[in-house]
Length: 160
Image 1 (cartoon, helix red, strand yellow):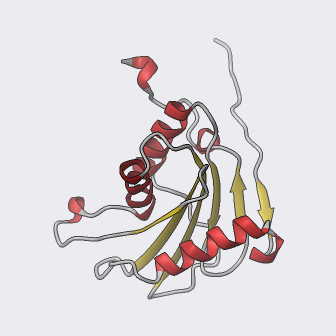
Image 2 (cartoon, rainbow, N blue to C red; image 1 turned 135 degrees about the horizontal axis):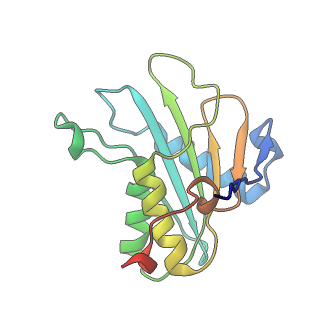
């Protein structure tokens, strides 16, 4: 038996003002999208903004449903919409912001497993990393250089 350790580096910013102008604008769009989320059951609001190589920004927010499995996360709404509206266009980065109607989200919220898998599909297909910026309502912002960082050992088309 051999043990291996899987590690990755991330960057932590204390404020949105520490981000590049482009990343600040992307995060502001994610925050705006978050405010329009439809989350009457969980009261947990998430907004996502996807920056494409052509400069277009596509937004998404979580959309809940009384039949819980029928809802969709903000990240997948945004990524799928980008794929439908701009097929073949490279995704450069995704900004994600989360808030709650019940408490203050003061730490970055990462994508769920389904969203990680969906974003990974795009990253593998386009053969270039998708940068992630994660934040709550307040507090620090985390930057990951690639979805592969937070989804090691991903299942992809090489297994099919």
